[in-house]
Image (tube, rainbow, N blue to C red; front, side, top):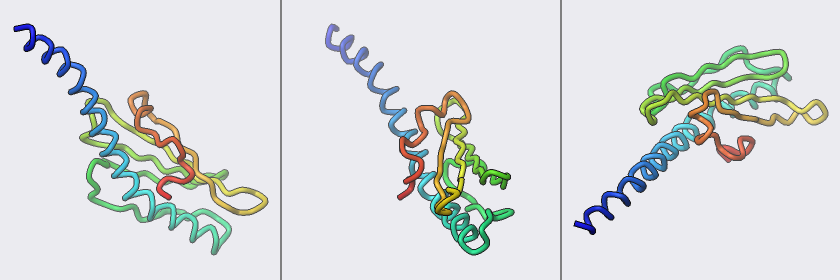
Length: 130
């Protein structure tokens, strides 16, 4: 009986940790699939025209991504990813593309759009995906 109790306690800790790991993998996979072509389109357009695209075609039917919203602003471009089937809370991650004034090189920053998304935001947005 003691062994069953110990196994129950260990499972109580292991299952939530495993589920969080699985959810991080879902977000990472979805971001690397979707973000690469979007960054490429932004950078190609900026290189050609010196401005961000008015709109971009976003990949459709991606696992775990409910929607991708792109907006062009005066200081850069913003990409908002809303995820589905990743945990019980809504996950939103915001990316911002901004060109450096002196070089024209585009850098990216990201932040969680919801409190639950803090766990899933990549540590180095600029190089993600590489």
